[in-house]
Image 1 (cartoon, helix red, strand yellow):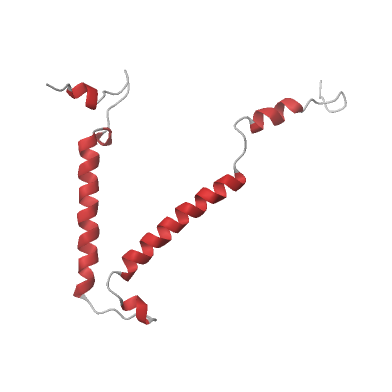
Image 2 (cartoon, one colour):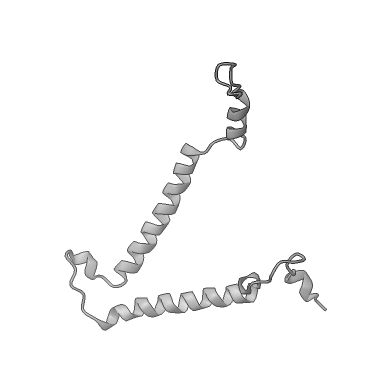
Length: 108
């Protein structure tokens, strides 16, 4: 016999349980999104496209292009993060290094 509480931990005391905290709700949402994506892609058969370029009229071009652009954007952001990321104590170290001189301090 399995314990349901082990697979579905309750929220900490005093916190509200939200519907996305339950794994079955997340799985349902993913399934709905997959069905919608397949439906929209299949709807590509239902109309004639008028693209500026020939490849824009290919089946599922917009879906494939959007996915490739999304993956490229995420990977670019990961690389950019490495470029601009600071140490965890970056601001604390900078604040501790500064000590005002007598001329800079204001004591009225």
